Structure formats: C-alpha cells, structure tokens
Length: 593
Picture 1: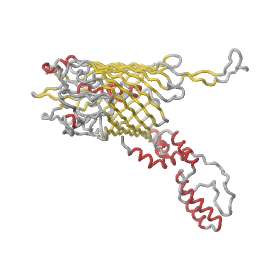
Picture 2: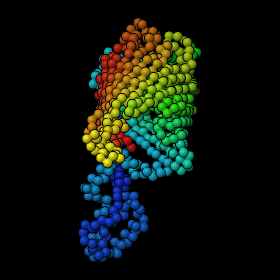
Picture 3: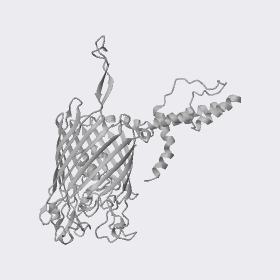
Picture 4: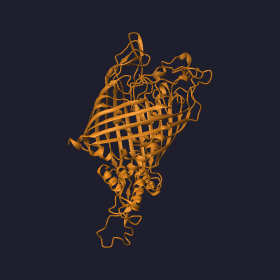
C-alpha cells in the first residue's frame, strides 16, 4: 500500500473542505454582530477578502477597498477591525465551522469535493470527469504453490500482495455547446501496479494459478499494468438513457465493456469471476516454416482496445441486438516478467524474462511478425455478437438480462496434437441475470378523494413500494469453445448478491459465487506421458477442473468510500492436482473521485 495517498489527502484537506463549503454555504442577508458596533469598524457579518476568495468570491476591487478602509481607521475601531481582519484572513475557523465543513465534505459525492468545486462548471460546458482509486490486499493463508521440480522452498513467491488501480475518465457532451444532441466523446486512462511494480502482475503465482489455470488468478487487476491508455471513442445515442433505442460507438474500443456484461460479478475479486468469465484461455500453438509459435488468445479483459465499431439497436422495448467488428491485435499487452525467485531455489534469483509494456499505445496494430521470436502475431478480425431480452418481471418490475452471444478472434492456430491450422478462435456464451426480490418500504399513501380516507376499512393511510435497489440478485453464465484448440473449453459461474441486507445498512451489499472450468482432453493428449502429464513445470497428473468459491461484503462508509473484505477458496488451482488448494483472505479500499 502506498502511504503517499494519505499524505496527499492530508495536504489538500483544507482545500477540499473549502470546496465543500463553497458548494454548500448559504449566505444570509444579515447576521447580528457578536460585539457592539464600533464607530468605523467592520461588521462581523462581512467576510474577509481571503475567505471570500476561499469561498469562491473575488479579491480584486473588494480587497483593495477593504484594505484602504482599514488603513484610514484610527483608535479603538482600527485596532478591533485590524484584529478581526487578521483573524479571518488567516482562514482559521472555529471548531463548529470545521465540523460543518467536514460534514459537508464527508456527505459529498467524491473525495475531491467535485473536483475542488469546479465539477459543476465543467459540466455546464459539457465536460464530465470521473475517477476512482483502490488498493487491494490479498493474503494467502495456505502455503505458496511449489513447482514439482523444486527440491526445496522456492523463494521470491510472495503469499501476500498489494495491488493499486487508479482510473480517470473524461466525457465531453457536444450537445451542451454545439447543440449536437446525443454525440459524446470518451477518453479513459488507467494506472496499475502490484507491490509497487508496474510490470509484474504475479499475484497468481502463490496460489498456483499459472499456465493453463492462469484465468483463476485471485486478483482481477493484473493485466495491462502501469500507465495505460484505455478506450478513446465517439458515441452517438438517440436518447440519454442507459438503454437507448439506437447506439453507435466508433474509435479505439473494447467489446468487453459492452458484451457479456454482468454488473454483479464485478463485486468479486477473482479474475475468472469478475473479468474473464471462461473466455481467453490459452490455445493451440501455430506451426510455420518448421517452427512452432505461441498464439495470443482472446483478450477478454478490460486491458484490450483496438480500432473498431459497435452498433446496438432495440427491436422492441425489452429486446436488443448488438454487434462489434474490430481489429484483432496480437500481443496487445506487451510482455510482463515473472518474479525473479521463481527461477531459483536461492533468494534473489535472476528474472525469468524481460519486460516490455506498450502501455496500450499499439494503435498501429500487431507488430510485424519476426520468425526468430517465439510468438506468432497477425492483424486479424475480431467480431462479437449478442442478442438479449431484458424483462421487468412481476408487480415489482424486477429487472433481468438473458443473452446469447458469440465471438471470433482472428489469429492463426493449430489443433492440439496436429498441424491442422485454424484461421480463428471462436466460442459462445449464455447469460442469465435476474433480480429475484425487492425490499418493500413503508411510505405515505397518496391523498384520497374520500372525505374519510382513514376508517375501519382503511385504518392506515400508508402503503408499501419496492425499493429501487435493495433486494436479492442472481447471475449465471456459461461459455463454450472447441476443445480441439483451447485448454479450458467449458466454464460456468453462478452467484447471488444481496443489496441492503440490513435496514441499518441500506447501501451495503454481500454476495457469494462459484465458478468452475473444465480442461480439454485434447490438451491432455499432447502432454508428456513419461512424466505423468507434465505441463508448466508441474510434473503431475493430467488437467481436470479448477473451481473457485468467493464471498464478499461491501461496507459502504459514505457515498464515495467503500471497504470490502473478501474470501476465496480455489480447488485444484494448478488444474492438474500438483498443488494444494488455496485459501485467500483480503480486502479492498475503494474511493470515487
């Protein structure tokens, strides 16, 4: 965890409080003086120029007049006025004032007090800035996974890690100034590191979720490390709702953000649950010119973007169809090294690979293929399609999403155990999300036209209504891709999230989930038989399944600050039985800007 965050907050706290006050302060028409008025003295109802500036006022002519006025005073009035001016100009407020400022700041919508009070002005001109930061701690309570070849403890595999993520988004609405209603442009940026290292996302090594099982990394935030340029695109919508009749997106975009969206899965920390969802497992290598090369699998994560377009339309009020067509860029994330200790049984082992991070700046597409390297790459076609039904069921109009989708990733690859070539990697997914219950709140009934609305037949002038968010939610998803060229062809996950479980904590939420992946028998058929199915330095049996169970509870401290304890249990984390089950405890501290 980086202590610089705490230092920064302490340093700018007075500015934040001033910004909060400027947004909430009410200037009365008059305020009685706390002392009898003196001849030639300032009234205490007047604010000093410095505080006026602090609260958003001007300091020019007003300041000069006040200064000249004070210089012209004599006697007791001058002394009292100067003392008053000095006190206020120092911006030292009373404890009550500080308390009010803190209350305004604490009950606001962001840690920056709406961008130091400038957020509304930005929005008036069409610019909306969003942001968030979080620190995630994951501590493995079971021993670190050890490769089977190890004759002693493998050093340098940390069983506890801190990961950092900071995101900024800029959205400009052309309708505000240029009257181009429905047209916006979006620019997203991000920074990530693990234990202070922006090039080494190794939180999965201790659990054993590497190689074929890397999808089950306990931490979802280890792709696209360091500073990274994210989506940059133009968006047109026929209306301002979240579910418009027609939507068109063009630019540097990521289909991951618009397809197979399961908002409740994002509450969890495991990468398989929150991010990959069974898509993107390693695929068969590609042979060319007598050599074999590794192939980039489907980049189903938040870290991939490419040139493309996305179109969405609604044939009816509750149905939609959408499609994405873009560029399939191999090696889009660059190269991340592994921790040095994995290569040696002695402390301070040498790094296993070098690091190259393109930081998302690969607008030119896949680099020209070099036969001397170990990785194959090409510019291909990336296509995702989805049709869905979004009903509102029952008297409470409980929202759901039921969808079927498919994807094609245009990178050459071979089937396991053969030189049979494939021009693409493809798969399908099935999604079923549904809100199951709603908490009912007691509210006053609408006024009755009856002269006696409250009587024996109607003893209470109140009714109940369904809460907009509180209640039980379910989410389920299944993915499939051919086992002939994908190491993990089948995956499912299903979970429950309850929002506002306790009346005293209506903004908290908690949830449980299970996710399980099934490995390819075709993949097992090519593993070395003499070593019992060795793969990725784990000399053990063949690959079978990996299962993850996870629980979380979000403590909503205020509108912009959350504390989230989390527990994970991963069964057969390496996939081939060579490592023990992994138990991980952790927590997240997340703040909205």
